[in-house]
Length: 210
Image 1 (tube, one colour):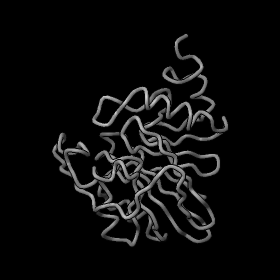
Image 2 (image 1 turned 90 degrees about the vertical axis):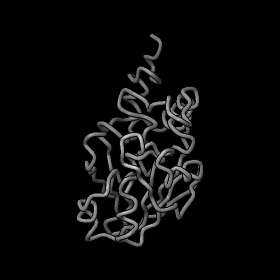
Image 3 (image 1 turned 30 degrees about the vertical axis):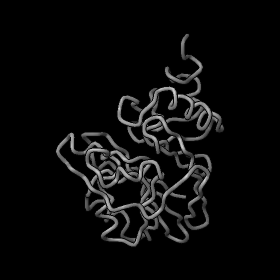
Image 4 (image 1 turned 180 degrees about the vertical axis):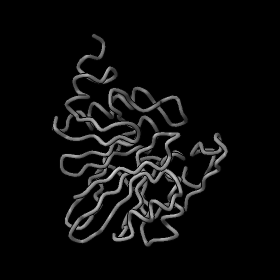
């Protein structure tokens, strides 16, 4: 499996990820942050199968409409965040003047679902706390954590649908229980590992409260 990070919304430092199976050329884009032709250029030799949103906030769904218009890919998001796609107030884009409206979801995800990409299976892990329908995507020793977990930090919980206690529980029971060498690809900021966050993250790591 190949993974590439694309930065198309630097003002939010959002990580958009392109993942593809080299044999079948089937691809997935995670959190297309903005309608940008660079996304189309990146997938021109691939078969985009899925557009997956880790949650419904505007800085993670801005490219949905462009990709949906230009490809046959299906939009997938957790069922609890699906309503946010077409509501600029719920997805918060109205607060920075963008008024984003994504096409409706084709696939409503739930915890434990799997998406197939070529010979690979990607497991959906429901990790509420930043939003009600926040998810992570696990494939092999890599997890795409959206705005659930960052390097030395965690997602905001002061937005509608957020809950600090819920988020901490999601991280500790769903992510930090994975193998320490699991690479964490967050929605914002640099990559990290489960081991690093288990030890040094001031919110959920070993050093929490020390």
